[in-house]
Length: 408
Image (tube, rainbow, N blue to C red; front, side):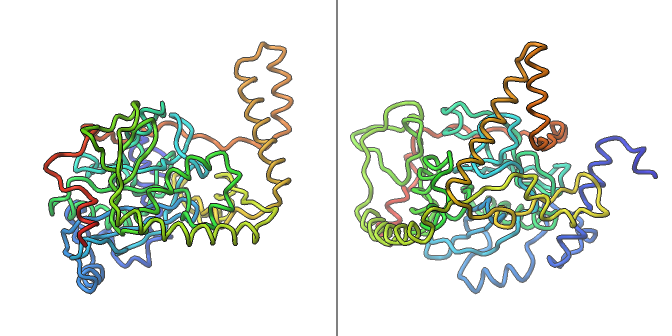
């Protein structure tokens, strides 16, 4: 078979296009007819929806990702400067589990708030088209998190990226391209583990990442209230949202937070939002008393959609969603699962540094545990976009978010 004799790059290029047949047929566009993918216009159906919603073709956009349900959304500014959802897509593949990326090789897809510029767009990606997420951002860097080349790209195959089908990424790229052409300097990417509703927060209250997620939720809530991407800064190694530094202070990721103030109108709106959230949280606590969410492994997610891979090349790797493979379990059962996973992790670390005698013992222990998920080789085709210059303080010429919000 000819493909077996091709070089690795050619194999990947051909293999990865295989996902189009299975998952993209409903999108309607025949990729073989696309002559210039970088300048391919958005479909007429989307342009019609923009017009109906009062959106200009080149108005700003925002990208939202929800891992658990495998969803990527495009939100776009209307004439009143508030954003509305204009498109949503099912993520074909994302690796790892719920939770942020911490270090290179952990197969985790990023969670957090990222700024995308023209430099993050890769028109020459071997994965059809790609947008670099910008990981690590200022928060990641100051907290010692490492990794690079983490993308939103085509090809339906992920080792830490959010991988779409080629037809999907063609549209996503076009949204970003048009907005940047229209003058938007940075596109905000919000990557969440799940929709941060009271019910979901209760379900995941025992997860080790819960405190990190509560921090992200502040930004999530600000957008829910305002329908505008929040102003994001980092100080004391944490995210802060829609805060105005006072008394001449500035934001330093590793330094003490300056004196800050929140616009009164926003404070009142968030207070009302929080009151409803608190009531919903108490209701959810009663509903899920003694229960919590089991977050499935990547292997468990892949098993749910394994039939989609039949007849496809190895590189085609849809992962399914956590909602499909996860489940609510008793708290005691979840605690046992977490303890077993922790023991497995300790055993693996011990085996890596053990003497020959203890190495054999560790191997015996590992043999009784489920097999690890195979980790593919580092992608040699990955694209590293130039990192945007840090913005420790707001540009003095840029009209602050809170002035827009308080006025309208």
